[in-house]
Length: 363
Image (tube, rainbow, N blue to C red; front, side, top):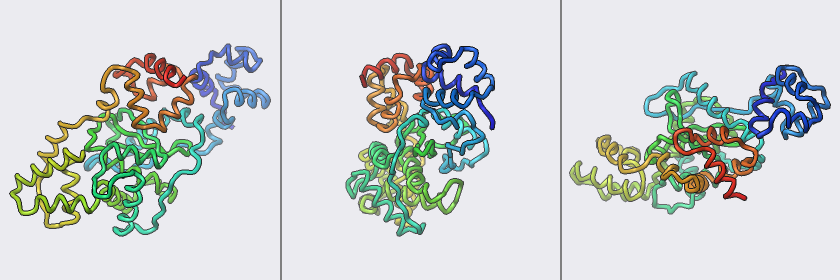
């Protein structure tokens, strides 16, 4: 049995406890606590009291004796990026930064699952219809990023906003942390680029119980199909097509931009869906799509719209209420360093000011 005493030091720091205070709570000497940190296994009674005091399963200190609690299946990447071992490792490391947050979080309980056995177009349309109803969006309207975030909340999927390292070439990725379904979102992502991959990862999350834990091209193609149908219902695509059909290509692009601006989606996305429904449709929209993105913010701009901690916390609560609640439940014990890491505040806001304001807001 392998005891990892270093975890004890990390845990006490995250709980805002000094080693002297922990020793007092356990009625042992400071030296005894130091011995545990250096590798000495506590006696049975001490281990039970230690675990009870810190509200932790004793297995936490024996990593070789517990099952893996963090899974990071690798799914949709940006463009033609390939999944690499480094990408997998770095994605998992990102998730591990939130390990203790979810270890101490209330159980997610029963979560919505959509089971569809066949991976064909009919099943994709059926699944997309169910998801659109859950998002509370009108039948003929495309999804914007706000509806996407609302959908994830309704599905009990937790959104975490952070900055991705260069090695993780994706706008978002899905994982499970202590049975909580989590989607990480890159703060540097333009909101127009985010909608489709966010829907793609959502579909993985609600189908995760089927055992899809590694790359599966057929599953990826199916999730792509569902995501497209969720974002762009047939009624909307047909309306766009009827509006632009027969017009000069330059006029078609301008009209597509008008639709995109009004409804908050990329030109590229609607062009791809037009091609799916009308195979003869062919229009180069790359330049127009790149120009359109300049008119829309990245995720970080929305979160950190000004330098007011209160405004930031409110934005976070609106966009990811489940994450907000989990952090709020632990906010009394969290350290300034840890809140800065969880919220990626290093270059945005002062972590202490955010922590103080958060505590004021919920008390």
